[in-house]
Amino acid sequence: MTTINIRKVTIINRGLTSVIIVICFLFSLIQSQETHAEMKKVSGTSGAIVKLAQNYIALSDVPVKGFMRVYHSVLSSADPHWNNANFFYIEYAESIKEWSHRGYGVITHPGGDQSFIKFVSKDVSVSGAESTREWDGSFIGGTGKFKDIRARWLLKLKFTMAKGGTAEWKVEYF
Image (tube, rainbow, N blue to C red; front, side, top):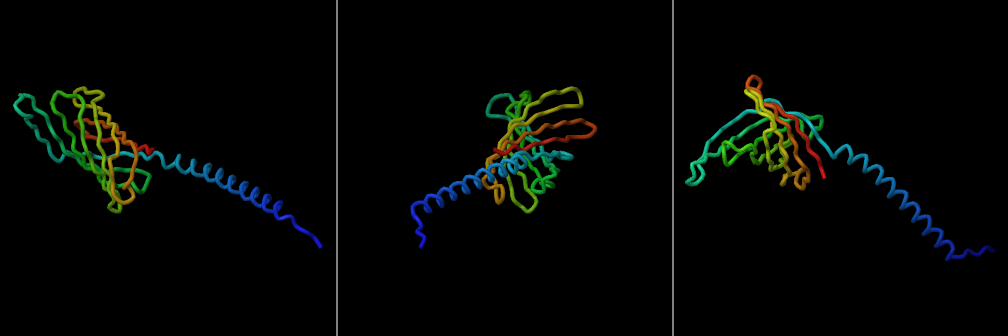
């Protein structure tokens, strides 16, 4: 008759289980880094940017006037969650002479989910009928798939009198 030492079997089983768990954990880390590297950045362009409204406003009793503009554009991207998304945003400045502007926007993604951003934009170059502006923003919330979005919004806008505004944008998840 053969006797089995239960303690040795238990130690061997625990050792094998630990090795298998470590291998699975390392494999999942390698796989998730590749997946997150692909999902960490989404980029695209926006076609014609349409100015829907513009108002100049007097701020309190000071003779300085600011402005508020409302825009709309449609985003294009290889990512289906961002392609053909409608982007409405309000940009404002407390002074017409101010070179940086602040704003808020809402992106309505295909399927109806929305993401909300706040941003600061500044003119990089202005010459005659052409200007370039850069945005730096962050997402402040969303609905559905974008409920807990944690990402940065970067945009480079080029505007010419002849062609209007077009932009290249990037979302960097963190």
